[in-house]
Length: 469
Image 1 (cartoon, helix red, strand yellow):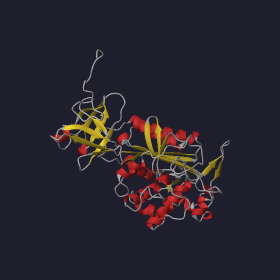
Image 2 (cartoon, one colour):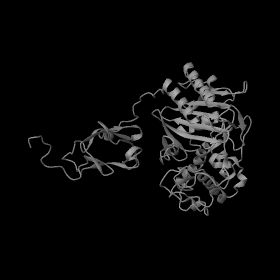
Image 3 (spheres, helix red, strand yellow):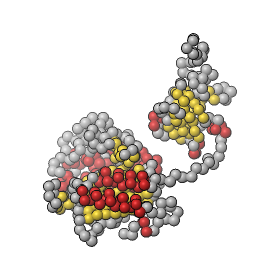
């Protein structure tokens, strides 16, 4: 396919990456393919809404893959499945707090909820009963009972993060039960087609890479089988390309109202469960892995199946996403490479901030609330932001700050941090003047322990004093 670098959008401040950045990206990809002993490896970078670079390396001269070559993406499939579940939630067809059995009775997993399946806190087993499901046909597990086995629940639900592939089989079956169509059909119609991902499919479509195992002690290879996973498909079936996954990376960063709103995608990227001890440095959201790499917050997913490894990461703060695909069972550290690609671009060509612009209107009543406030002796600033929202932040040292969205009744709701979901309201005196701000029962006053305000517990009548008292 023609690289988007050859036809940049004239409206974009990022018409193409600098030559030094492109060479650094290619060097990282070449190093990953060489040191990881991958038969082939293809990578791509998206920035500010589009793919801006792609590169590859291969062991076969003249047959390098490009951004349109399909690879199997393994558990990145789970993020697509999660998108379908969130769509059902947003349409009011289910609630994430619902027990799975409410919509899919007879599974035998008890009161496990939809949310617990999404973030792997349901306590289900990590894998299916033997034989190894990734190297055997899905027809050997024709029923959910074959996927779950005799002991599907290993831990109390909601108590710990324990990654579960069968859990996403249950989510796929939930989608089919509520939608009335196959998981594959729902995915194609509701996600892939709206996002223009026509090279993402359940079965390989040429051109595609073949999967290989590379001997750990010799430079020789063995072909891996490519099984149709049957009921396990929602956990890892998909084949995709670097170009298509760049489109999905943009979606995970920004949302798309034809598929899932920015708010719901942000919810997917919000930490919901910590990682299992000894696993990646980060956490898990709703169908998304979360990681910290060299001070950056990344969201996306890793994936592997026999013959393939894959990773998709996005750094929302930097506006950069990266995809790495290789056709080797093990060897290339796809997750680390994708994180490095993001770092190369973001460090060499940092995001250009939007121009400062004044608010469209000045509301004097809101302006009167801005400035310093005190919770006890801790100083905070209250700033007016867009759409009549406010931001509360500590002025010195540590402290809890949050952004707040305006509500029709004149209150604000916390968007992040300690006060997420909490209500901020103005408490007024009988004459209409402001007494204090109430935030989850905390009183913020204009002066430290303001004697004129209704401070819980009251203020000593003697006031502030020095050492001679």
